[in-house]
Amino acid sequence: MISVRLDRLLANMGYGSRREIAALAAAGQVVLDGQAIRKADTKVLVARDLPARMTVRGAPLDPPPGLALMLHKPLGVTCSHKEVGALVYDLLPQRWKAREPAISTVGRLDKETSGLLLLTDDGELLHRIISPRSNVPKRYLVTLARPMDGTEGAAFAAGTLVLEGEDKPLLPAELEVHSPTQAHLTIHEGRYHQVRRMFAAVGNHVEALHRDQVGGLDLPADLAPGAFRMLDDAAIAAIFTPR
Image 1 (spheres, one colour):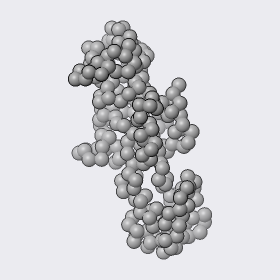
Image 2: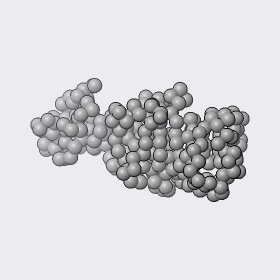
Image 3: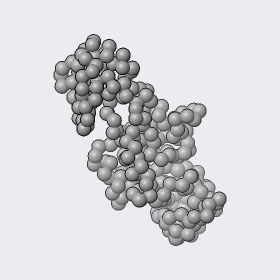
Image 4: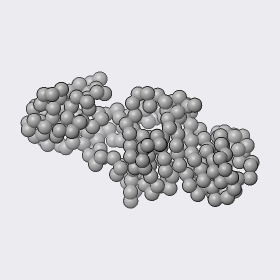
């Protein structure tokens, strides 16, 4: 834990400029443990429980730096800061766009893929999740245009499938068939449009794609599309504990 000046902490969390934070404090709008902090240069210990102890304008403080969250990404939304159109960051509180360090997606889901998306401002956590050394599997519910012929599971599990335009074989992946046109596919890497290209390689087309699991972390049934939830230490640990 570190101690940070109040004006720096709140400005980096998107609450306004340092001058605006100073005015908020002077007006008694920043309260810690029941006491107003009226000086913007007051040092605050940045702890995980700070949102339970501090209010700004009468509302609980946003999560301090080091946040991690899961978002149920809806269809039609892009994982980008710069693209034109609806972005995943538009689903978060507006002031979070000004946070420093910035919140980033942990990998991406394409515009026409829905489901579990992780976001964090913790660069070390982000790189740990996406690192091949962590071997964090990702599971997708796949709906296909045509019935499978029964050879797909063996083709994906062999570790010899090479995607078009590449020369390195894919890592083995697990296919769990639910019906002729629907299955769960678990992959252990994250190449560009990998699931769609895998099925294209075996002569099929993905009609719908939904990610419901990252590592040992499931997308909760009660988390609606567009909604997000903060991750506690146990949820973060579950990412690295595949079933």
